[in-house]
Image (tube, rainbow, N blue to C red; front, side):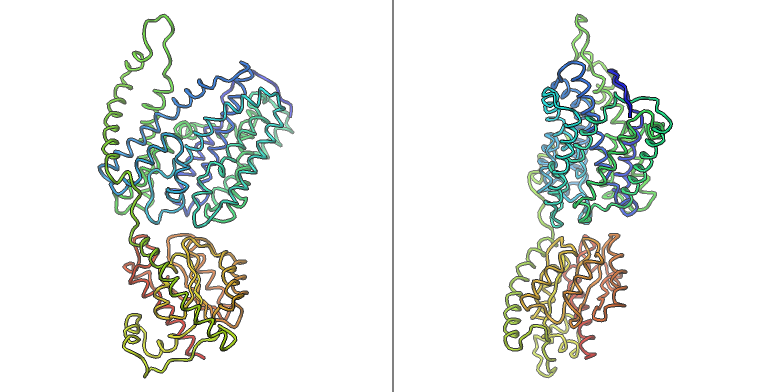
Length: 635
């Protein structure tokens, strides 16, 4: 494409529209994740835009002056971003101090790391998962992205000045940046761990590829080298590519789940490349996107997108804590209205005030601070700021703010259960190996126990798990292999109390794709029992290929008792429907319908409404035992 050169920086129409799309995506994702599961991709859209705009401006400055005024760049960025961030942090901390003291934990670290733009690094070990709202959201979770941008602003002008000073071909620099983006994406896949998604999701090294895409685009597609008038053919091709990029971006927003393994194994990288293409086309003044995305509504949201992004999660979290019936659509609209009001105040009286502060002309005899503090807006803002600083001081003076939140009842129970499971496994494995030596296999179940031989302890267990004598004697000595996620960690001790020959393998955050390898390991050791209990699917979708591998390892001779899930996640109901369908082709697959049983017994669940509490665990184990007994009595 022919390009012309102009030394005059231009305002890129359409970019405010892209910012609006990004912030709309994030807000809808936080309010209605089922409606827009890929709305979190608004953050990579922000990243690519920042990478492009900042790099493009730095290159223009170097071309004009032969150098980059790094200190001036830092001042501009601080004036643009820091005051609004501080105001939001202090306002949120003040609210927590008076109305949400359960959120005081770690507040000192959260505030400090955000003010130093290293919150994302802190969050990799201490923060809440961006996708996990079961245990209650934090009003600060979304700020991880601002830290990555802050780190980028700190080092990037120096790097750009060095690269341009070396006279390296700019297209070569762009290619090298794409290569570095690829390395970052590889790290994202390597460091992905479904049991600790934070390291991959929040890491500067694993997420910088989006910013690098934007920076690479600035070297190869500078805004000042674009013609306003193109030939019909070139313009048609440009618009066709832009339309494709826009459609694919929308598909990404609606379809890319942030908890899929594939998202971290390349899909996020591909989606970000598509977004980069969208930005490239929009940047061109002759494209239809440059004009279509330039309208009053989108421009309004785009110019206020920073403040909207800052205030959305605190408003959502505090609103949900204060209002009982907060999940309706109308309540969601009310939350958005509150965010827009706060963002407008922030935009007018914080962002714009500091952005327009300039030093007085020399010789006027008026100092900059006299000019600054003479503004009524500044005076009003200072009064508010002093109040919020006092409130923040009160918040961080609390002892809780210096410490991590203590583990709740569920977390303590899961930790305790891990030790109980390990001890029970040692005994069960020992018994299984002994039986293997005697019979040549650990598959077979023991014979039914004579009801007349039941001890008082046995009868107490029957009462506890609501089993009759026939059911109890049918399953009491069954050899069982149980595999699952945190729900199984919760329940396994009850299963092992009821059926001592149960070997349980369970861990928090386990995904379905890890189950085949576990079962293969047990099979290789001769420890895969005749009865296989599986409780998986709470943390992600059960892939058809993963299910096939699981059933292939188990084979046709063993009986599979798969407990369906109960949780407010899209994939849980999908998993349940999928499992029900699979019983038509797998005769040894038995669905233990926990979802149907517990839906009318919310008192059996913990505070997260996912994991069974102590009473629920007993009912869960009882349901499995009854399903096994029913199958055993058919023999």
